[in-house]
Length: 341
Image 1 (cartoon, rainbow, N blue to C red):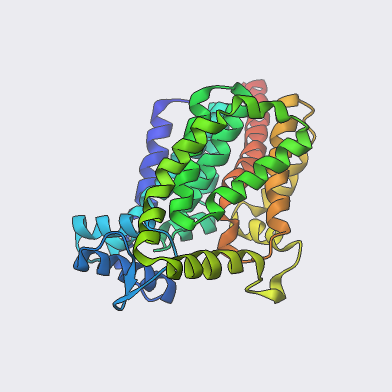
Image 2: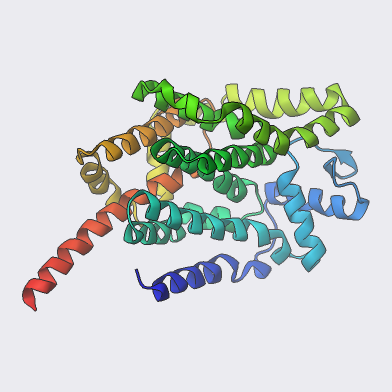
C-alpha cells in the first residue's frame, strides 16, 4: 500500500488516542488507585514498593506504576500524564497489528485490521484509561503473535521476542501474563499434535530471557516484604482471582463471545460473515491460524473470572476477521469497477 496511507493511519491513531486526554478527569476508583500509587512513588522516591495512602499496595506488579510515574516526572501530575502511556501502548498495538497482519497475510489486511482495531469501542476505552489493560494488551498480543510467527517461520528472533514480551506481561499483570498465553500455546500444540516445535523454541535460553525481565523485581519485593507480599500478591490478587468468579451471575460459557462482539462495535455486524468466510478457507496456514484463535477463545470461555476488559487480549485477533471481510469486499468492488472501465 502507498506510504501516505500508512502515515495517515498513524496520524489518525495518534490524534484519536492522545487528543483530549488532558481534559479527561480521573474519577473512577480503579484509575485513581493507579494514579495515586504512581504519584506516591514519585513523591516518596521509592520506585520498588508500590504504596497508596502510605501503605504498601500489592495489587499489581510494578511496570505500569513505573510507566505512570515516569510520565509524571516528564509532564507533572496531570490527567494527560496519567493517560500518556496507555495511549502510547495503544498506538504501539495498532502498529503491532498492522505489521503482524502484513506478515501473516498482506499489507492491505494489516492496514484494515489496524483500522478496525483503532476504531473499536473497547480498544479506544482501554487506550484512554489509567489501567494496566493497554500495556497488557500490547505485551500479551506480542507474545502470541511472535509465537505464531516463530511457529510458522522458525526464526529464532521471533521466539526471543515472544519470551521478552511474556516477561513484560508478567511484570504488568502477574503470573497470568505468562500462564494464559502458555495455556493457549499448549492447547494449540495439542490440537495440532505438533510437539516437535518445542525443540525449536529455544526453551532454555528463552526462559532465561523471560526470567531476566521478571525475577529481579519479584526477588527484591520478597526480600523486602517476605510472606506478606507472597500471600497478598500471589494468594489474594492472583490465585483467588483466577480460580474464584468475581461475577458469578455472568459466569456463562458464551459470555466472552457476546462481549467480543460488543467490543468490536461498530464492526460487530461484519464478524459473523467474516468468520464464516475465514473458516471456509482450506489452506494449511489458514487452518493453523484458525486453530490458534479457537484455542484462545475456548480458554477464555471456560475461565472462572469474567470481566468485560478481560476480552482485550483476544481483541487484536478478532480485529483481523472484519478486515478479511473488508478485503474480500474491496476485491469485489475493484473487479466490478475495472469491468465498468
